[in-house]
Length: 250
Image (cartoon, rainbow, N blue to C red; front, side):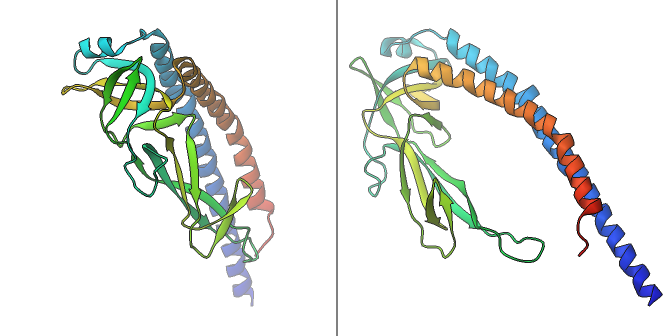
């Protein structure tokens, strides 16, 4: 009996030590994420925002005169056909899938299902940007980022599990499409292609003024979130240690 009690005590101490160690790991991870946001992402984004604000206004003619590899920032109306027949409203879009998971509490009971979006693909075919009646060829690029004012379409899935998205239940496997329609006002940041046209890096729904503001706000967001993460890391550590030391015994 004494041996069994000693074994149980040792097991409890070992489990609590693992929990404390896990708290340290979690706190360090939170602090590291905050440090990356504060000292890497925020400065880099601020530099990009400044660079964008200093780039000259460009016309279709000036795009033609730029050497291959040169930076390009242009605004116009995106024109093209739908690359996917089942999505006639989109000429360029991102696709995400809804993944629903169910965790369990300490008593083994199921928690409320939660869902998250996972990127499947970006579809950006060769399109045309109309700039004051002059066309500029925009090359296909499935690595371009799409942001700004985007059209959105949600198609429910057929999975058994479901979780709320913006107040509405969505089944596992649902799809979210966000992108542009033909005729949308677009600002594109990219490079001049060696074979002509523009290779898009960022495709923003809106005018240049809105795009510049978006870049500045993104830099500020990285800084605020980074500082918040670093400040919260000690709290994560303290709460984790208290839960490990004084939590209910299983």
